[in-house]
Length: 118
Image 1 (spheres, rainbow, N blue to C red):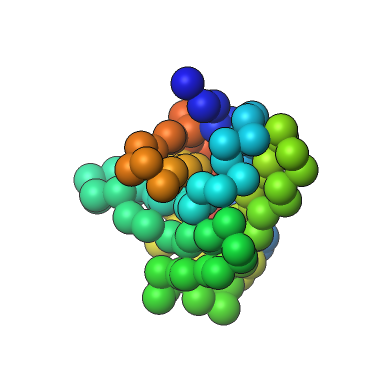
Image 2: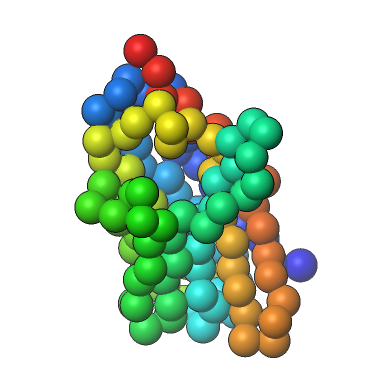
């Protein structure tokens, strides 16, 4: 089972920054579309950003201009990042890394908590 492991969450004040990382072990991830989702308490999980294997990006409208998704494909080990700037309290959520394969299968990480509060 392909594995995704997130890191980088934490507590930050409004206006601050965090960078989330998602380590994807296995060359299979090189061709996957990678994404970050988030889920706040009482809310449905929502798609925050995606990046294809060729580098095309999409963003949730509320994070455009503040968040940047990127990826490093290094053979067996691949990493996806989510740079989050000018964080707002409404960005508070558990953030999940996701891989969408051409087969239709998906893999999920375990999630990392991001809390934006003064």
